[in-house]
Length: 244
Ligand code: SF4
Ligand code: SF4
Image (cartoon, rainbow, N blue to C red):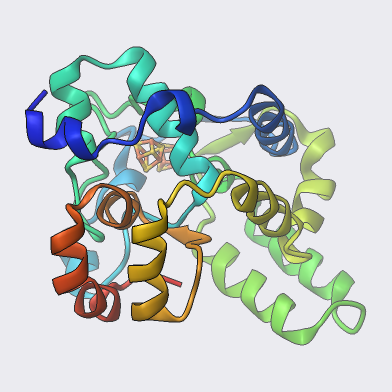
C-alpha cells in the first residue's frame, strides 16, 4: 500500500463498526427477503449498458454511511492490500461497472452488499402497485410516489423469492422509509469524518455529516488529502450526481 494513502486512511481501531452497530445493521438486512437469481448473465444489473450510460442511469446506487464503513471493514479483513488500495482510491460516482463486480458476474462483497443491492429484484411489479394502493391516503403522498418511482425500476423477472413470508413487511419498510430512518440513525453514531473534514464539508454544503452517498463519494470525503478537499470539495460536491 502506498505511503500516501496509508497516511490518510483512518485508523482501523477507531473506525471499525462496533459489534452492537454491526448487529443492528444485520438485523435490518435480515428484514429483506432473500432471492435466488436465474437470468442468463449474472451481474448484468451491476453494470450499465451503453444506452443506460448515455441516459445517465446510476450504477453505484446510494450507500448509507454505516454501509460504507461496513464494507471498509470487510475489505480490511478479506482483501489484499493492493486490492484495498485500489478500491479505497476509487472516486468515480457513476462507473459503468460496479467496482465490486467480479469477472464472473459475482459480488466480491456479497456478505456486506448494501441495502439497495439486497432489495433489487425482490418485489414483483404487482406487489409494488398493490403496496402503493394499500397505503395511499394513509402515508404521505410523496412517500408513495417515491416508492413507486424507485421500485418500478428495480423489478427483475428472473428472481425467485426464497422467503415470501417477509415480503409484506419488506414492502412496508420501503414505502414507509423505515429502512432509511434506521440506517441513518446508525450512521449518525458511526460518523467518521475528522474535525478538519467536517469543517470543509460544512463550508461546502451546510451539512455536518454525510448520510447517503456513493462508494466513490465517501472515498473522496474521507480519504482525499485535506489540501485537495479545501481546494476542490465545493465544486466536486456540486457536480456530484448522487450526493444528497
Ligand atoms: S437481480 Fe435479476 S438481472 Fe440481477 S443477477 Fe439477479 S436475476 Fe440477474
Ligand atoms: S455491491 Fe455487489 S451486488 Fe451491489 S452492485 Fe456491486 S457487485 Fe452488484
